[in-house]
Image (tube, rainbow, N blue to C red; front, side, top):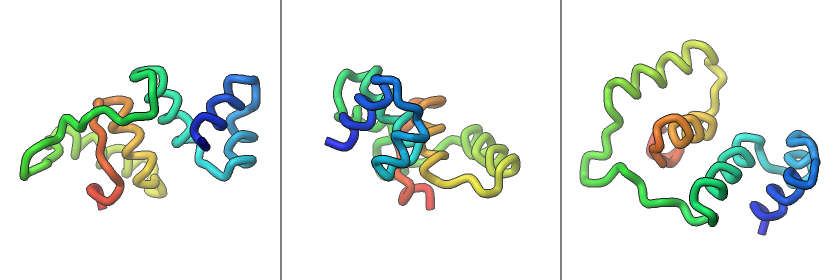
Amino acid sequence: DLKDCAIHLWDSGWEIEDVCAALGVSSSSCYCWQWILAEHGSWEWPPSPLTGSAQTITRALLTAMEDLFSQDSNLYLDKLCTWLTIQHNIFISTLALS
């Protein structure tokens, strides 16, 4: 599995940039995989805390996301998803944000 390979190489002392180049993955994916594995012990995503018909992100989070984009207008949605996951324990797809 790609995730296992990436984390194994990284844990074996490879630099994150080398892992990403060798496997064609982003560093944000590696950090996210490492966090998920450390937090949950497997690659299974935990159930999303956002449920129901109106999966709305609170105004405070929208403001925080706007601040991120004002600091870095080239920020990719996958990095924003990773930030939401790590900082706020919100698992959301890039499709849901676009």
